[in-house]
Image 1 (spheres, rainbow over the protein chains, first blue to last red):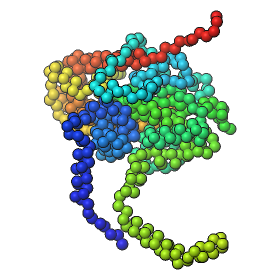
Image 2: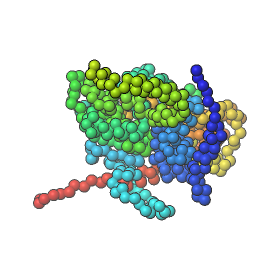
Image 3: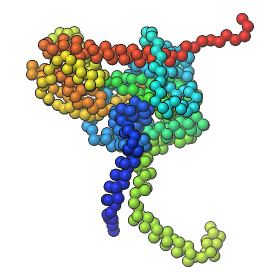
Image 4: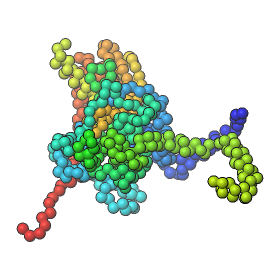
Length: 368
Length: 154
């Protein structure tokens, strides 16, 4: 028999009213504007866009504000909003070689064409809290350096020439890339489907997996071939126009991880690669993604499957923080009837246990 | 129409659409008012906001994969002289979509083409170029200049 229980409407209403009040905080302080969040909490906004899988700064900022800064809640809000919109189509693939670069570094080649550009990085800061930021002190304007814009070829294109590093791989088949937002997940996935899942995957989870590979659970001897951050043009082909329509630019972070590979029966020793591409400025996520992409290629490359980071089903099934938080957090919702049933069961087992008495247990152990 | 002429027209139209798509909606409105361009049109579609799935390539140049969606707003209008204009741009700005669609339609009309070019497209492109140049200069200032340390005698 299923028994529905009603109640709590007034409590829920008042709880949400209280939430709105606490979200607003001290009303003597000005309310934070979305433009302030976009400009000054830009990397939180970027994370919400990446894992919410929706590029829209203002919506991500609204979600951050509504979620009181709880980024997974904000990601959840963005995902929910996403489902309300129709899809116009698929873009022409982004050309990261043509990026308006804001940061570009390589840990493998010092003198690469275009140079090492540090950009707005936390690297080399001393991680000392800066009391000046507690006030309104205005920072200096950035330094500038004039000069011709040098082309910045992707490092992978430079290294590929002598065959010591694997190429990008073939273009996809006519079937087109997998779309995990349209088809249910079915393992094994192709690398295309995996990358889509990783691109929206939880940064913390991927970071931990990537770290596990460095600590020896499926070690992959990685080097950062290149990280680049900047804006790329987006275009889409539509039936009403005879050319791809320009939509504007999006900021992305790309990581090319280069990994030593001792070769297999089929493949010669060479460097293999892991790839990361993420919305916004998100170097840690792009690096973790590329390490995880590489470890998940173990089967394809004929490596021994020994570690969690190589287990596609384990990694991809648990990388989505909206699914994860949904299932973990649902435990706090009323389970009164389930628990009542289990309580009855435990009572019965306990009664049987006590009826057997101490001696009964000893006899049973001896028999085993 | 000869093929070269058609390619030229499409290239100009692409450039115009790119200038508008990159621009801020409020700035387009400001230029529009300044140029005194008309706003009458028949709305054929939109403004309508939806998603475009952005794609990347595995390794940067290999097979395609789906990266994530972006919001995109589109609109289609017809101006009184009959030209149809389309607009597509990232974001959710319906007013920007309307003016961009109008600009696309007026840009096809001999009576307005030059005004649209000179008063809307040219300033937007110049501003975008200036902003990009500044950004490149700021990034270039963070370029690492390596120098070799000479150690020991000789």
